[in-house]
Amino acid sequence: MKIAEEIYTVSRLTRAIRNLIEDGLPALWVEGELTNYTLHRSGHRYFTLRDPTSQVACVMWRTRQQPGFSLLEGQLIRAFGRVTVYEQGGKYQLDVQSLLPAGMGALQEALEALKRKLAAEGLFDVARKRSLPAFPRAIGIATSPTGAAIHDLAWGFSSRFPPADLFLIPVSVQGTGAAEGIARAIETFNRLALVDVIVIGRGGGSLEDLWAFNEEVLVRAVANSRIPVVSAVGHEVDVTLCDLAADLRAPTPTAAAALMVPDAGELKKLLELRRAALENALSRTVSIWRNSVAGIAKSYGLNLIFQRIAGERQRLDRLEETTGTAIRGIIGDLNLRTAALRGQISALSPQKVLERGYSIVRSKSGELIRDSDQIKLTDYLSLHFHRGSATVTVTEVGADVR
Amino acid sequence: MSDKQPRDNALSFEEAYTRLERIARELENGSIPLERSLELYEEGQKLLKLCQELLDQAEKRIKILEVSSDGIQVKETAIE
Image (cartoon, rainbow over all chains, first blue to last red; front, side, top):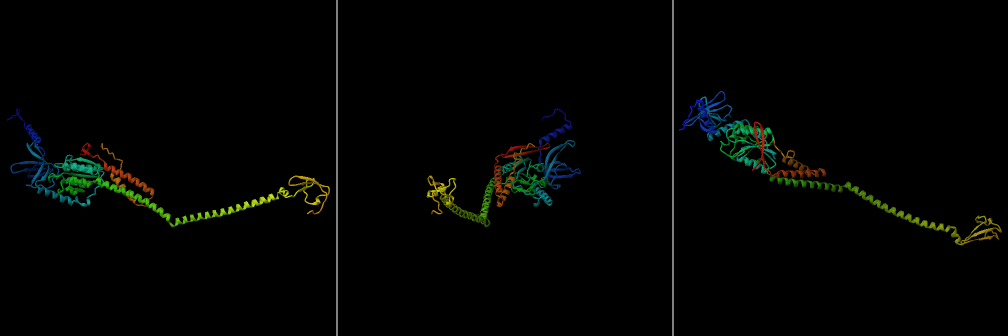
């Protein structure tokens, strides 16, 4: 046996015991029968948990989360907390952080009681539920950073629908403070307004493991969120109060991804249809325009214009023809007449006359002689022949020589 | 917040897709002017391309928000 060399004071001993207990024991769940329960005026609760052979004093401070069920003497309950030493009293006690009724029946009963209460307030009303965005721009995730759920969610979202940005607020999903942590994460997402849908969740577990998702504080946070909330807790069969309050319940985290985002592969097929629709619509528009142009071409009014144009053209052709013939006629006529005139003119020329044997007779003074009265005997007259000339003397004058 | 959003000014998938549907509807109304329908068609093709690119993003990343009393820190990490 090891013996301490020094003499301990009571305080020192008590502190040593305190250190041993507080450092040596983790936060833990204790199950026992509830006795000596008092709710003090201050709001603190004092009680004892016992089993057939032992008992432990418990204190639950006013600031702790209120139990979601009524505490009855003799009831089997589970208390979660740390063992601490109350030095002044020299006693140890369990500093209780949360309480659950023990056993499935009791837990279920508490759950049903809370469910009835919240349902009466309308928290689960279908009319409250908002629709989720068809193509979320950003998704907020509140779950454990180490569980299977985050993997299923993040992988599901990013592989199905890469355009969505993912934000995770790491929280613990079971044990003391889990419900408050998840509720705070929901509030943080609402405050930041980064995401347009939130998913909370965790993988499967016992009813106790999933208990955080049945706690009033979290159920209210889900119901109060302005951003739609999807609850993806546990397995298909597990329905929590959060599932009821959420805008959408996904049976599992993996299913949440499929319910919350479209599938990129499907979307690509849809985009191909859109592309075809665009092309069809364009070619339809073009052909509508083409037809309407053709329609106008066939229209009575335009045809009337065409007919008139054709008629005018014909008239013009005819005119051209007639005018041409007429002008040609005139020109030909003119040519003939010119030639005739030319003939006449040349026939009138004095040389031509002389050529035919006539002569021109002038007096000595150069006067043309047209009449025998102009001359008398012995006058000299000059005679001009076709070729050459002569001067002659008048030897006889008569009235008419013809 | 050191959050870096590479697509800040770009259209989101939803915006691009919604616009695309509107264009398809307008284009299907054959009585719009030919020039307008060509414009719509071209815009539609651009939006289709953007949607395809958004869907084809290979990088899978998640931003982790660490909330403390000092504020919020963002860490980005790849998804395995």
